Image 1 (cartoon, helix red, strand yellow):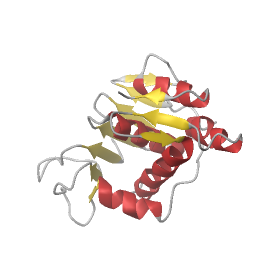
Image 2 (cartoon, one colour):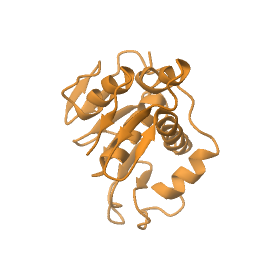
Image 3 (cartoon, helix red, strand yellow):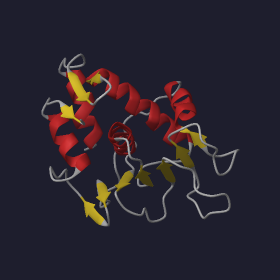
Length: 181
């Protein structure tokens, strides 16, 4: 079962689309808005080669971006890696682009409008979101035997409430507000 589907799509199906899902210091998003953003980043990730079983390294400071990117990777059946090095990632989502000539993943998404490593391949997150909104990601089943996500170097196979992503999945799946303040 896809954890993102359980956390978001199932909430929409049971009529909770307009219920607040995430709050931080700047805004509150409903379940529908969060699902829209997750689909957009997922569409961009898919366009950059992420598929079921792919590893997605997420190394960003903003908790909302970390959450949305983690959910988007899960939506694609990929394995998000938070708080640690991603081994053989298909994609990196970072606050700052690695230095030119640095060894990087096949693709890099940079949260700001900062320059990218390879102009013909990498994107700023705002540009990726614009592209992803035209073809949002559908739900894909994760590959059997792969972890749901990775925290540091520890593989997690079921949501753990002691982790950032696991706690958010548990709250969303139970219809509770995720407070990122």
